[in-house]
Image 1 (cartoon, rainbow, N blue to C red):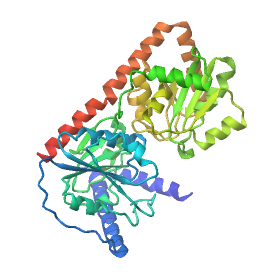
Image 2: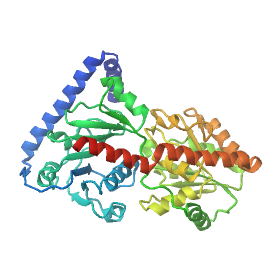
Image 3: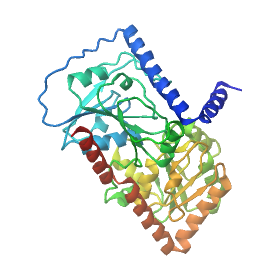
Image 4: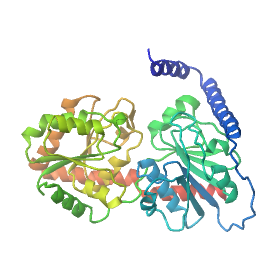
Length: 424
């Protein structure tokens, strides 16, 4: 058995222990990582200047921190939306690891937000995610700007560098359901009931917990379908064609072949159907190229809002596939908002998308069920052609579900209320 298998067995054994014992383990883990990082910082000779300036503050000062905070992924967009929502009631600072071209993405942030890019040499993938030569250091920024509250995101556990900040409240976006009991983590916002339950399996009921699906940063522009038709024209796809689409991170580690295998099984029967895939993983590109699968249009990733909306606007249905599933599903939410019914599958790990993908708006097949996925594709094409009234009802319901669960306006109101109650 490999090391991952051994770790999985140990984890399952621990999960069978009583809640108080598991909570003690989480406390010890949090404290151990804090101590390891504190000693490591000392040995690294970080020269953090922990001055306490006297700053006349008319509004609370909120710091958003994320290593990859200027990327386009769902978690980062979630933080960007929260930051924008607080500019009227607070002084907002946004701290992120500087990456080439971050200025383009920064345009989605309110002009009143003070950007704090930081440089670094390395960032560890493994827990506790130490970052070398971080300049400026998070603790320096907290001190220099007299920050009242930090908002950050993690898989759920406490990690570096914010585990070194112990004297101000932290609001944590929990994206993968890992638990933390770091004392100054004031609120934990889970992105689904699925992730909340995952943490509850370790620490039981948690008064800090809130549940809110990860919202959209913006709702679709009124011209979304026009943008989509322009993209179809650019790709040589007829206006009357039925188009499936998939968008996601270009990472082989999350690639599930179920969607492309299902498409390959049906494409010969539907010569007027097409498949647009934005940000394809290399493994998918290899399959499409080597097997010469027709009418698959591969687009590069983009962090430009109107290009992403053009993708969704070009579709009739989203064909979602991802090996590890979804803890919320921002890409799915975007397509639902446009009015696209969904095809998806149960995954090997996360299935939070099944919380809202009902039969009114989606078909969700079992994991590895290529035939079932192909049947859903056939059903959608046929339904649009044979029973357009039912198809239009599905499209309308898709938008209703998206507005109910993923509204940026609702999420902004929640954010404002949370900060107000925390810092009043």
